[in-house]
Length: 395
Ligand code: APR
Ligand code: PHB
Image 1 (spheres, rainbow, N blue to C red):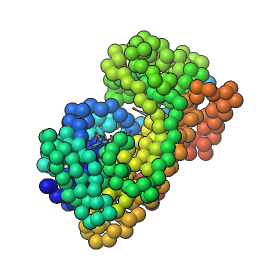
Image 2 (image 1 turned 60 degrees about the horizontal axis):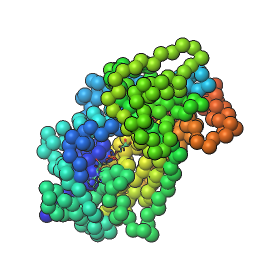
Image 3 (image 1 turned 30 degrees about the vertical axis):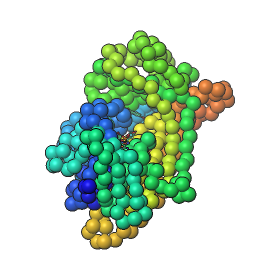
Image 4 (image 1 turned 90 degrees about the vertical axis):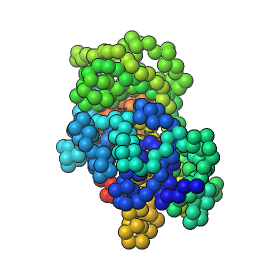
């Protein structure tokens, strides 16, 4: 039987960043991750970091490569009705920007740090259940190297994503879930070609939504709205490029550079919140507590905000004995979570085409996009949400 102060289930961005922040605050933890290291490091996910997320990674000691290789972006482009409109973040938000740095790289940096300093990070350690959430010794039962094991803790944090087990520690009468699924998916591709754009392009088109993003100056990341149930095998490279061309088309000539596609996958879009984010001595953070559709680029940033709030709360408890921040954790996080839920829903529903969408609804979408393009207030609302607020300013 192993014992630790904070037992962390899940070694994704939330669990790893939390472990690093706790380590810096002199608080010990053990991270249990069900997958192997290679799987966790290769999993393709988001790539846009808010300033507050960059600050948190620096505070965790993971700022070095990020500062060298991350690309600062000062805006995004909206395309609709054959036109392009730029949203200028610093001008609209009083100086804020975002950074393009892939989640795979964030995860690699955090894992290297954690293992380098000998922090217990167990791969292929699958948690089955959390017991005793309402006692002062919660326990995590897990399997590691074929053996059943128990981790006893002062506190447990479920950073185990949407399909994790930690949220089962919230009793039925306590737990509330809110969710929405969307009637379309995304086909995401990675291509070995320099992006044809300096900033991300979010395109509304009669053929559906398209997004142009990047992973580095030589790797493009692109997405197409596709029907639910789409098989990537039905999308040969040529078809993908032709469809992207059609959806990004402008009234003036514009060329999308093509290159070898190295990965293709289909991902669902969903919104989900579990409340409260704490029961007894068990806390939920990141995707374990909330999911957003990726259109607003909020998932990773929300996960980082949760664990920053939580690490501060554990540090306060250790330094002063006060549980004030810990007691406020769920309410503090949920304010930011619901703002991001709304923004992600807004971006998704404004830019995608529902299968049964009427011409009236399309005209409403275009009117909304036109409003963003012509009103500083409407553009600032988008820019503030996208670039994000400092953590704690919403507390
Ligand atoms: N035991 C141990 N580990 C588990 C278990 C379990 N029972 N269940 C899940 N895990 C691990 C998963 O293998 C994964 O590595 O928990 C981790 C959860 O990681 P993420 O799903 O990446 O969630 P999170 O760390 O909160 O990061 C949120 O990831 O999903 C994206 O867009 C999202 O960018 C956001 C970020
Ligand atoms: C990505 O680069 O994967 C990405 C960027 C912006 C989004 C979603 C995904 O809104």
